[in-house]
Amino acid sequence: MDEKEKLDFAYRYPFSDEAKEIVKGVSPDNGREGYLDIAAAMIKEALDKNGIEYRNVSYGKLDNIVGYAYSRLLISTIGDAYMIDAYARAVAKRSISAMMEDSTANIARMASELGLKTEASKEGFNVKATDFLDYAPSNDDFSVANYPFSNGKVHLSISDIAMFLDGLLVGRVKQGLPIPRSEIPKFVAAYAAGMKGLKKQKAQQGSNTRGWIEKLLEHPIPDVRQRAVGLILAPYLVNVKKLDVEDAYKIIQDYINRCRALDSSTRITDSQIMYYCKYAKQKGTKPMSLAKAREIFSGVVDFDSL
Image (cartoon, rainbow, N blue to C red):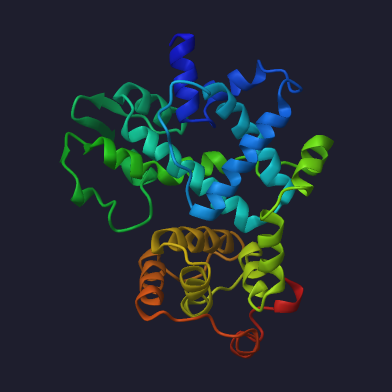
């Protein structure tokens, strides 16, 4: 891979090993205000639009790559768990768009960096059935029965592999986030303090009548029942935060997995999570009040200690 190809690859996947190498070679004080402006715009787009548009440009790629590195510092300075999650999913969504226009060789390279070995062909990719089962997203769409299968391998098209890698991409972006405040330069913290719009959005999340749900999402608890997802989390994310069903599903799934780390007996399946998200969307249900939640989950969740 020559320097031009490496720059192009890093622009498509700014969290890649190649991108990290490029950033290391850039002076931290060289044009940092411009990089911070790019980073702030990236974060704002991620939060306002639940995604970052991928533009296949012929210039400015280096600035974008370094801007991404600064965006990680900025989003860590802000420190809001929901914002970090939304930001990570937006970056991953951008790279999925880039992947749709990329070569099979580059996609295979990125998949390898994410831990998934593939065999590229003109028609797509072959993935070992065991790897498919290990890495596939936890929803019914990614069943071996839904894809061509032969000789112990599952065949995926470019669009299939891009969606297949979504969860791994999100995980890669989230690695190391939030960056400890002790590692964030003072000029970045000062810039973050002056950012407009984002601080207001964060304050609204904590000050409105449903700030307690944001706190619940930030704190896994040892006993989560289906009612918590159906009556609180799904209605909140879908009908208050106005997220797509799939995005709400992913946030709840991640939350439930963190809860399982505290108590593996937590009983709710991925299909049930998806059902509650779709039901909330269809019926337009709103989350229950804090007073009602205190009553129903008495002895299970101490909302005052979140």
